[in-house]
Length: 93
Image (cartoon, rainbow, N blue to C red):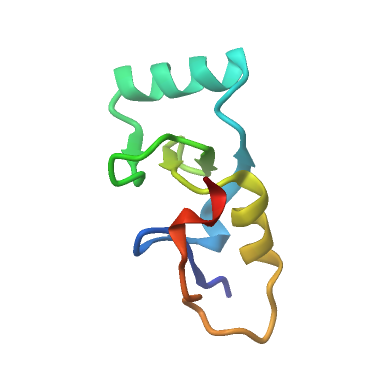
């Protein structure tokens, strides 16, 4: 059974629902963001900061995060640590 991971600024996603974590800087990433926004399938979890990571969910939603994909992936791989890690959101800037 999956658990919730922190994707920045107190926002969490369920690990069982995540298909991919990708960078928003490529042309396909930008198209993915735009189409999700146009279709109402985007969730902005950046708290007004720059989007550095995209989380693609199994239901077609795209979650925008201010954390780098490497940071988010690292939180998936953590084992034996608390569900919610202490965030220093500025560490990716």
